[in-house]
Length: 391
Image (cartoon, rainbow, N blue to C red):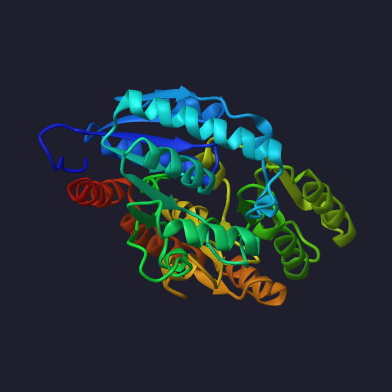
């Protein structure tokens, strides 16, 4: 439990435009659980969804849905061009900001904490209008390898005057913000006991090795790289490729392409399509190796830490957040992004050595403890105290 830094809990309103069980929203739930009464937490979401019930199940957390029109909520990053937003979208945004401003004035929180990039923009403006200090939690790289260039310019400009303070999910993300922005790093909280201690290496005859990728199916997540590397590493045999996750945010065409690719590579009968699963620990317990293969730098790499916390050997792309998480050869392996051959070689190494899988997994489990929810709660409590003491 994070130590309370004042006599009465801070009243904090958390904002997110979606209520879907995704990376940033999972991290928010874990953070609120770990704060455990140190804040009086009220969450305002732009839609109804699975996240509502998950947050309401946390002691001391209240949730409300302030409905945002789908056309506004689902505006894609590529459509965010300053001065070129359609009038209807701009009108919806203005109304929503004004409504949220009124709600914040009613709630009178000590602080607003935005949990997504969209909520940072609309929520930051609403908080400023309501005269409430605002903390941006930036989980996206503000760079044109991750966001469209107009969106990068907009967010970087806004970061200079909207938030009272910023926390980012990695040093890599922090480095994409303008110099002079008051910011610090808060790694995403991951449950350290997500799986039991790793067992002794399985005998080679136990079952085929299972290699998996966990996360939403999206091109930048690189599942196509994984399938190509798997096919190169294991052109025949009984090894299995598990894909845990489904397409979100209009990316269904990519999912169809992945199925076509598996057929083209001749591995369709060894690819296991798990779809969306909310029991992450159960999925990780079924794997022998976890792969992270994003083709653009990952802002953090929450799934990397989840795999490590489960005692799995993890092979991750050598870019962005994973570089801050994995010590090469000690608690995981790193390969260059989109390096199909390098990833295939790493998979063969791990398939051929149960001892290597075990040693990497055991070290990974220990390393993952620095990303515990308790550590995150302690850090954010200090940031809250600093921001509110300045305003």
